[in-house]
Image 1 (cartoon, rainbow, N blue to C red):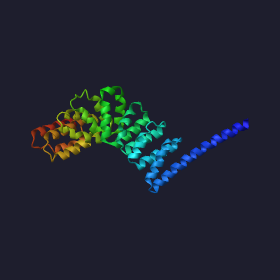
Image 2: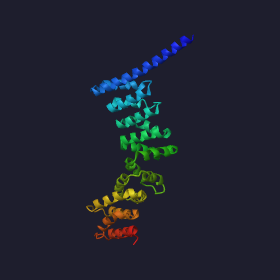
Image 3: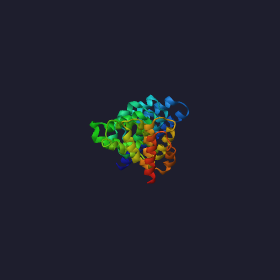
Length: 288
């Protein structure tokens, strides 16, 4: 009896080993087909391996499907958003972004509230790759009253996406007080990247949003200095005096010593308003 049990166990183990090697052999064949330029055949084989028992095989299959890309690849990956292995699911999420398969966007956004740290990172990478369509969607979820219980989760993803979300987030500022927008500004301030300032500055021309942009720039601190100086340099060829004045006042609020030379270049400006703004900002920076 013991001998029979051992024999049965050996048979089961042998079958498992055969299955593993079979899966590995198949994915290697699919990868080889891809290298040979047989993309459609490689894609079909890789898609079939998304159901393989081995998570390692599934992971390689996801990477190959994403590398080949196209509509069929997007459909296949979309259908496997219920993947149980976190590492494989993360790769599926990232590759959907890589190939920008838009029909999956809503389902990806639905994953945010329950996502753990690894999936949050994958979602942020994916949404960043999708671009503005994705960031607009996540911002709308973040701002939706019906999803207020999930607001913190969407906020975390927005911060992880990075400066690319600035344009989508800034749209929320219109028609609201700074108090109402305090969480929105916290998102922008949490992204310690000068690019956020660069993306925010064009909104200084918007009368409704400009005061809040100035306040946000002040909170960005040193991350806003170079972008402001660069924008002021470009303003020398512009007649938008209000924007010029606002940029000058931002340098004062930032107490940006590196901006003194730029401010002095405006000290003889034809507009008294600009000259007054320069004087005020220089006083804020120098203290005299």
